[in-house]
Image 1 (tube, helix red, strand yellow):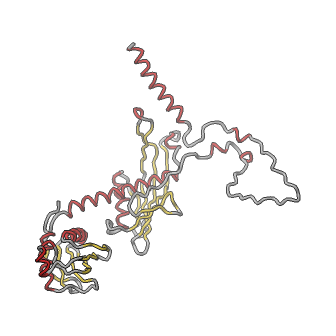
Image 2: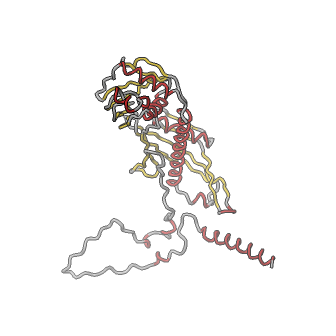
Image 3: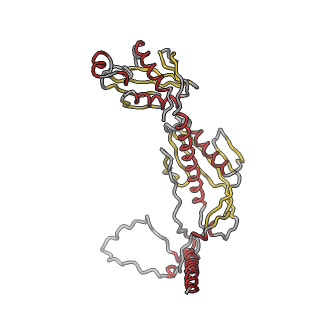
Length: 362
C-alpha cells in the first residue's frame, strides 16, 4: 500500500511537469495549424446594375494571406503589449509614446523635479552595478554600458533564474520651461541574447524590454520618494529652537532654526495644535491660510474658559508666510490683506509657538 502511495505521488508530479512542458508551446507564437491560409475566397455578392453599391470602410481591412509568402500567423506576435505603470503620484504616460515615455509632475514631496528624476536613474543603475558610458548634462542624455538581464522560468519547485540577455540604453530627460513637469524617455540602443534559442529571450520584443525598463525606473523613483518621506518623518518630529528677528522684507518675524521643509511641517502642526482652522495651503508660495472662528481674547474668553489653549488671535482670517532662508526659516503672521499683525500680539504668539516647536512629537 505504501509503495502504491509513493507511485501515485511521483506519477502526479510527473503529470504536472509534463503538462507544464506541453503548455509552454512556442514563445510569442500561435500554437496549432495555419489551415486558414489555404482557404479560398468566396465570390462577393453580386448586385443588380440598378442598385447603388454600399460604401465600405477600409479601417480594418486585412490583406489576403494567400498573397504573402509563408505562413502569416507564424510571424505575428500574440504576446500582449507591456504597459507603463504610472505608480508615482502625479505621473502619467505620454499619449504619443505610451510604451517608452513617462511624465512626472512637481509635488510637495519633490523640491527639484529634474534632480529627482536623475537621482532615480542613477540610483537604479548603481543598484544594478551598471557603468555609465556617457552623461551629457547639458543635453540631459545618459548612455549606459551593458545591463545583464535575468529572468525566472519554470513554476513552483521548478522555478529558477538565469541570465537571458544584455542590453544598452539611452535615457533622455526633457523638462518644461517652468521646471514643474518633466518626461523620461527610454530607448533601447543594443540588445544581445546569451542564447538565441532561449524562450525567455524570444518572448520579449524590443518595445517590451523598453517598457520593462521604464517600469523599473518608475519603481525606483517611487521607492526613493517613500524612503525620503520616511526619513523626513523621522527628522521632522524633532523639536528645534526659535528666535525673533526680521523677514527679508523687514517685517517682524519668528526665526525658526531649521530649513524650510522642516519648518513647513512643524508650523502646520503647531497651528492645528492651537486650534486654528487651516483653510488652504500653498507650499510653492510658502503661505498657510488659516482662520480663527471665535475670539479667544479678552474678558469674555477668560470668563468662560482659559485662553491658554489658543494663540490669542482675534476672530478672523490670517495668512502665515513661511519664507526660505537656507538653514533658517522666517515666519510672518499677516491678516487677510497681508498686513502684518500688531507688534504687541507677537510676544504672546512667539512664546506659545516656541514652546510647541521645541517639543519632540510622538
